Length: 143
Length: 161
Figure: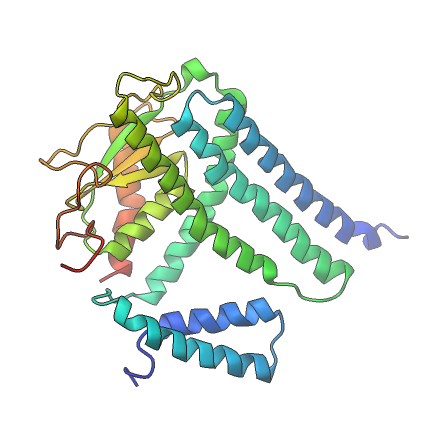
């Protein structure tokens, strides 16, 4: 086997190791960051490149080693990019409710180092706390 | 034509996704994809009134800017997780005043913020003018707000009209 012949294998391995490293760092972030809102940053970001690296490795493997195009991986990343912010947003909203129910921190973890979220500077509140004004962009239905 | 294909962008996206899912470009797959791409937007159209026009050229440029930022974001967040001690970390809540007006633009804006450097969007104000964002490390919240507004919001204003 010449050095040229193992180049595809090296490229595939490098992508998989990069992906796995970022996935590991993201998980480590979830363990060590101080409170829920900080921990949310790990899974929404460090793992996107983690998964991305593994998917590129997968595309390379099917193309270089098996000689066929596999583009399912692009769909996986598309769905990931669409769903990751939404699940993060839902967790953040639950956290906001917890802060309101127990503002003094009934659960030790509930108030992070960032403190209580400030209110918007006009007279309104956040859409998690009060019904969105009709006709506004936050409204969930046509008036 | 407008009646047959109410959302040309959505139709193209559905066809591409269908072909990717089949993982092969065949005539049969293309025909089924086109049928889906035409039928689905017609059925879902009534649920989505008053949608804004989209400038596809700036939209695609925006996607590449965001993809690049996601790669950078991963390295930044990884560095923070690995090397910054918890007591040096300065997490902060940011209240971002928005000039975007349509729900579609605000959704893309919030999603972008969640995917890019050290920020997760948490909530929108009940009047739809402010976005609540949590930053993992923001020693200077005002500068962070200005950066997000100039980098993403200005571009998005060119995408949605």
